Length: 332
Picture (cartoon, rainbow, N blue to C red):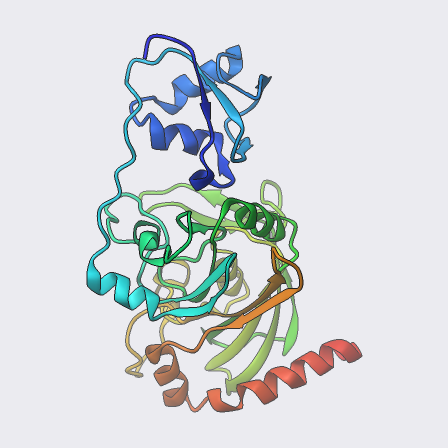
């Protein structure tokens, strides 16, 4: 490309960071060069200077200066029939603006180094009769199961993204932990900072450099001081927040080798592998008005572990109602 271009942000891009928008369309352009062009004002959005983290909206115009590499076409491979069938079978809610699916453990939400099979690459299977491809509005870790919300068009994507960003959502997670918290109910208030490493990025408690991270928790059931079934309500959305917070208070999530290490297992028990963290339910403002609440069933391994440990998932509704009543009465 040897001339300046004004490129309109497509509806498929939803609300996306500027640097990611460039990475998708101009993969040969390095991040360092993009930052340099941004500083010089060579890259602009609707005529204004912006930073790499600026979030684009459909319809905005991006000024793209001359680049060495031509604009590539976005290629998405056809979704395998079996993948499409499985993904459609996991739909928990569907309407004109929102899709909610039950993400299985072990399936990544987005691609990355060495990850070729992921939900983002299968979203064409969930287009149905819509004019646009559905898009992600939040994330779950690869090994976390449960509720994953998708927007079916750009307007819904903007509204849902804002709801997550402004903390207008109520998210409930269930976890099995090794060990039992000292308190039956409370809040974990420990700031978290990202730390790069040989085994990939992780987060740690850092009271000087960390960002505010808040997690409310309650012990639903426990086995002595050996293990607990926790209800977790993240009030902030930091990377690996629940995993890092549980490990920080001495009760790592079962199967979490990254944050729990050898402490993330129960010796002498054949409970299988895998992270025991499940996005159980979510309540959020619907883009078309009103409130949407969706609940995801337990994956088989999680349910088997609960039964092996003697926890009763069938009594969950009654116990969660009790916790809600305690909350309303201020008894914790």
